[in-house]
Amino acid sequence: MVNKFAIALAIASGLLAVGCQPTTPTGETSPTPSTSTNNEGLKIGSLLPLTGDLATIGQQMAGAVPLLVEQVNACGGVNGQNVTLISQDDQTDPVAGTTAMTKLAEVDQVAGVVGSYASSVSGAAIGVAARNKVVLISPGSTSPVFTERAKKGELKGFWARTAPPDTYQALALAQLAKEKGFKRVSTVAINNDYGVGFEKAFISAFKKLGGTIVNEAKPTRYDPKATTFDTESAAAFANKPDAVVAILYEETGSLLLKSAYQQGVSQGIQIMLTDGVKSAGFPGKVGKSSDGKFIIGGAIGTVPGADGKALQALTKLWQTKKNQPPGEYVPHSWDAAALLTLAAEAAKANTGVGVQSKIREVANAPGTEVSDVCEGLKLLKSGQDINYQGASGNVDIDENGDVLGVYDVWTVTNDGKLSVTSQVSPK
Image 1 (cartoon, helix red, strand yellow):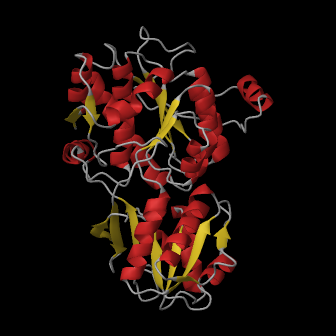
Image 2 (cartoon, rainbow, N blue to C red; image 1 turned 90 degrees about the horizontal axis):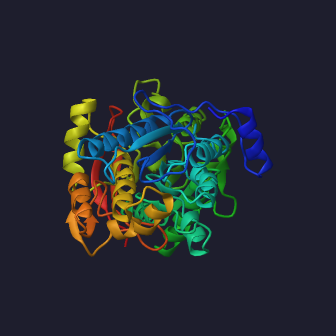
Image 3 (cartoon, rainbow, N blue to C red; image 1 turned 90 degrees about the vertical axis):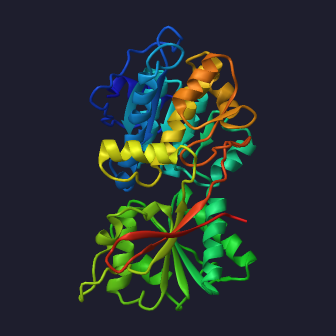
């Protein structure tokens, strides 16, 4: 927990900080403040939404990180010592996320952090990370804003992500809309970095494919903290577009789509969704019609897929540990944690500067291709170069911290289940 004195210092430094109650999972201990050295062992953190608008997906993502650390420690750890993990709940809130990131960087003095999921949280946390020379690898923050900030030199090489930016997903969704024969499309987006960034990228991509954005002059965006959405849902479905591209988070997005149904404005209009709502519980939260059918049955969407060489082994491990298949962004979270440990081993240093210096080297060619993190650590210990092939994909990281990736096309079936129907690669 961050005490009042620490919070006061953070505010005095110009940080957005409020009190929160970060959690440390059972079996993990928060180390006393100290400078990370090889003598202390590698310390990493996770900064993911265990509560808030993205909690359903975030909880699964957070579950991947301790499994990776457990596997690494079982095969000898990093630089000859066990890895310590400190987990924080960012509450799907930039202010709480900034406070938690400050604790990880300045109190726990971790070398790297897996996080966050929400682009708005990562956007707030990266300033703290870069200033403290802590590497932040996001498994799910897909806003194009990070690419722009990296190009300007703002992130100082302390940022990467294992999920591709929305410039690619927006293109994939635009291609899907064209394939379905949609010519007139409206958009509705959560008003944050993720929603607005995706919206702009989709509008650009769809127009280049010959489509028309019905509400381009007056885009429909909703407040992430709103509780009623009648005005926004009515505006999104106005003028009878062929489809509405809904860029939402699960909790608030379900209320918006339920409102559209209750007002009778969504009938006969195709709903197109994105990664922010792809969870098994989402159709149920939107609800059923009076005849017992799921309101969003037939909705289609895109989500960053996983096709990496390590995916089969991760799926088997997850099934064994969790008795279910891994959820969205679990492979990306696994890969983010793997890259932190591999980079530290390659650098022979348990520091953020060390991890930053080797992160692209272990992720990209040349080097021996490895999909097993323990095999990778073994090769690095012997002085060999590696090219990690992850569960989410090949995780080749470019100079802006971006990866390309592939996208799953998914739909909501009539019985409220989610089904992946195909994959699409941005072109």
